[in-house]
Structure formats: C-alpha cells, structure tokens
Length: 406
Image 1 (tube, rainbow, N blue to C red):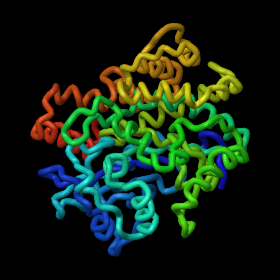
Image 2: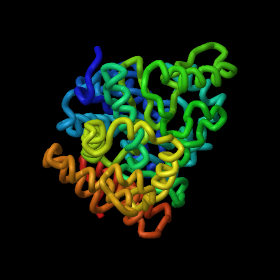
Image 3: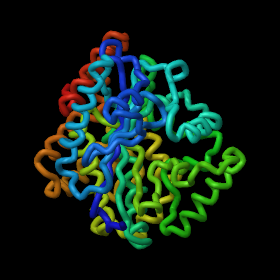
Image 4: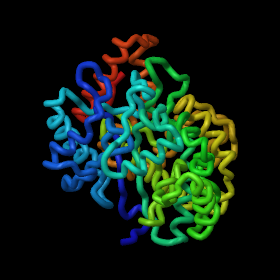
C-alpha cells in the first residue's frame, strides 16, 4: 500500500546487549529471540513492535510493525518492549545499552557476526569489507522511514531531506568515545560511516545523496552504478541494490519511502521520538515552500552539503556554519551555530509539537546532544571505572525511558 507525505511513519531503533556488571558486549541476541519465541526466529512480531537481529550478534533492532500514523505515543510502546527485553535478559545477567557506540568495545576481537538467517549475506559483506571494525560492529542508530506516493512527492521529500541531513548530527550525536578514548568527534559513528565501505565507494557516495529527484533518475545515477560496482564481488547475485545503498538517506522504491539513516540512537525512546518529531515537522516546513522554493532546494550540490555535514559530525550542535546561503534557508543572516539553526526550526514548529515532546526537545537544545552530555559527565576522566559509571547510568535511562541529566 502506498501512502502520501507524512501520512505514516516507520521507526527503527538499535540497541546492544551487554553484561550487566562489566558492560562487555554479549553476543546472545539469538538466545534472547529464542527465549521470547520458543524457537529461533530472526523476526518476532510483538504486537505493534517487531524485534529482529542485526549484522552482529550483540545488536537487537526494534521497529514499528509496519507503518504507523501515531508518533505521539510511540516512545511508550518502545519503552514497554525494552522493559520486557531487560526482564528476559535477567537470567543471562545482561541488559540493553543505548548510545550509538560502545565506549570500551574492541571490535577487532569482540565482534561476532550473526550466524543464522541472512548469514550468507553477512558473510559476503564481511569478505568484502571486513566487518570487524567500529563502522560495522560498534554502531547503533535510529532510522526514520517517510513515505512518498509518486515522483512528485519523492522530489519534494528528497530535496528537503538532503538539506536537513547535514545538521541532524547536531541534535543526535551520541558516539564520542571509542576504546576508552575520546575520538575528537561528537559523532564518531558517522565519521567511520563515511569510509567503512571504501572498497566500493559507489555504495555510500558522499553520504549526502546526489541531486536526484525521480525514480528513473535514481535508478540511472545511483542504483545502476551500485549494481555495476558490486557485480565482481557478488557472483551469486544475493545482494539487492536497496540493501546496498548506504547513503545517509536512501530511497526505498520497494516500499515507496525514504529512510533517514544518520541519526545516532539516544539514551531512551523519549529522546529518539522527540528528535523524530522535530525532524519530520522541520521537513514539512521545508517542503511547504514557506522558507525556500523547491527549485532552490534542488540546486544544492552534495559536495556543498557534505562540507557542512563533515564539520557537524565533529562538533555537533556547537559547529559554526559560515555558508551564508545555507543559513539563509533558515532565515539566519550571519554566522550561526547548528544549535541556532535547530532553535530557529523549533521556534517555527513548536505549536505542532505536543507538550511532552516539547519538554524533551527543549532539554536537548538547552543542554546539548547526548555526546555533549556524556562528555560533561566524564569531565575529562576517561578511566574505565568512570566510563562504566556514566554508561551504567545510560542503561538506567534506557530502562526507565528517562533523559540523561547533567
């Protein structure tokens, strides 16, 4: 079934399984799914939420069980499932842990690929890309799926999404630490995302999608080069171009949706869904033509947008943007921070946001991205003990659907 713009939504959240005391990753998603289902299944229908495996054996994905028209109470649904999962994990002395990267994991030695369904695909990916690095084994994200009905709606949505992508990490960055050390990037997940498929650069491109605004052009300019590039590696033809496309937002013509993939997972569903609400309401403004005409949106080249994106993954909301034409989209006339861009967007859409989500968005805008708050909590102390204390607190935030306070 096809839907019109913003008629329904699809949300996917990824979490890692870790041992409760040591916080070491625990690759037992198969045991969790077996315990829940009675037998191993890669996808479990749990009412309005579905549980499924990911590439690596310590990451679980929760997603809306089909499109939903209701974003308002979605965080509560996810929170209920998280509580159930933590309950099932008790006998394994294991919990779910949020944030987009594990701060102490050493993926070279700790990564275990999923060995069950789809394992042939994952094994091929591992053979091509070596999935033992941080970009594969230590990344958790939220995906937002937004529908389009036809080429006209795809054109509008893709144009608006491309403009918003560079500043999204200013809201959502939550991966400041790899292997016990600050990386210098608030969004380390996206820093490795850029290059984790460098062997076949056609898959990721510049992360920001090309200026493509119809299904025909998309197949010609994006899918056709992807299929040609993967052919020497995929001799059994088991990989699909929708699956292979790794840009920061991908067109899913198999379900008439654009999937935004660059959003780091937060400390709790309340934060994830509030960010999803702000992003979708902001896209509505960009599509409406109130601030900028569609033809002007379409003129932005991915190289110019990537330059902004590249700086934002380093400094998140504190990034200073000097591109006057980009700032003018948001009605800003002089150099401004990414935080100021989001404040401008929030000011415009606030009346469309419920009080619950307003409270969460305002806390994030005032106190910073989750990466910023994690670093404030650590206060320069990157000892294993201190890191474990802060990330244990994140585990409590997830269990109780609460924001990390600073």
